[in-house]
Length: 386
Picture (tube, rainbow, N blue to C red):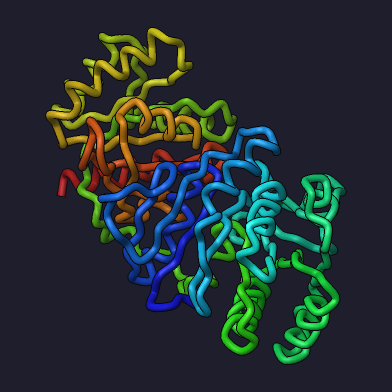
């Protein structure tokens, strides 16, 4: 599906932008996450992921932001554009999709938020998170944000031959349908959806926009295997973790790491920030819980002035808002994606600003099992000792 191995991906927050890059990176493509619109002089990459920061905007502002980001996009036959959405349907995907349709750059959007590996599936048009549904159909969710010409592909229809499925979709498109939501309860069904998108593009010449989580991206990229995290490109180093997410999943993960005595929690004041750096020089991991009070934000900005002279640590941010605010304070322009330190968790180096070249790990606030942070820190400890 990728023309000359190149693609543009639009994401609604920074952690999502980083994690959706992973299957493309694992497929051997270079990936760069641009914080905001790409600017002249930024590094080129096979896959450019644009963090639009629309997750927490109101629907009208999300529409406007997306319209501006996508209005110059021209889809040549075979060139991939991808709209990354949250697999639990957080954010403004309907408003984003409406902006893209209003820009008239795609013939058809195929929406498949399922991520079966993470317990997120779609059945009978309803999104199920670990088997539980909010009882609202995907089509209803999209209609509430302005998408009108809708249809849906069921699990049963995904069992048809690809030729029959193509005939069905072309018929729907001929009737004026421009957005199709899809059931998907397994990776096999996501693979069928990816094949459908490819055939619609290569055989029928349609400009098709895949809309999905990292689950669909794995199949669009052609890489469905998890990266070998035992041979990471990232240099194992002491971690300074900045935790601003209020998600209970992150706090459970942090509690496990603290219980396992893998890191110490420090105050988010000037002394705490200074001690973080001293601890990193001694090979120790630290965490600061950010509440983003002005004095705490000021202390972080001041600390970055001294951190910029050191490259012997890894910055770990949990939560899309946290990652974005840290990068804003550092005046970063983007992230070179280099690695996967755990399934679905990206690592790379910061591009631009005070922390240029510093290694960065980003994790969505609600993502991962309880031992996620512990396993990452322990793997670094093992490699630093080795």
